Length: 261
Image (cartoon, rainbow, N blue to C red; front, side):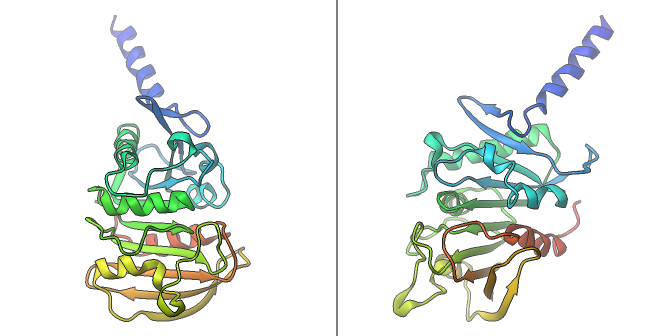
């Protein structure tokens, strides 16, 4: 009897983490996907990046995308790819049910993996980027950093909460999630909401940079503020996830992240 019970407990534990990559993890009638990092020992708490997919996509793409999973897997980061209802997200106003769902995804993942809650990163692309902004604004979940690609909220909004820092990239010729120029053609306007929420003063022009293996030349301006930091990277092209951008942000953030306790 003891042997049978031990076997059942082992089987249940195995089933608890069986939903990886293309096999979804279910939370009621909704689901998400998981991509484990390379070389994880099964014990050490994992940093987490929750990435909201673009319009018309699902988490199945997130966990195999070379510019998303290709950034998290070699860096020891657990990737979570939630699935939006109707392959989209409800980010237009505060109180989104998708915020509640994403919080449930993080809590469900924490039952399956030892999560380092001091290193929770929220990311997204296009509509998913706007949803990542919405989550960062509305959720009580402590967020170490928001990594947003080509999608924002209305800069006139006010956020209840703020992440530890914000990093946003946008193309000046983006006509899908239009580049949100400010008055007089102000190119710093895409992060006006966060600069206001963080109590930022003047930004610092950090010049141009190129990600390893990438071809896009970015111009970076950064604000060190009363609470947190805001970084804006601009490139002269359109609507896409730039090669190496997410990987570079993780390298920079994790190089300065506190050791897990």
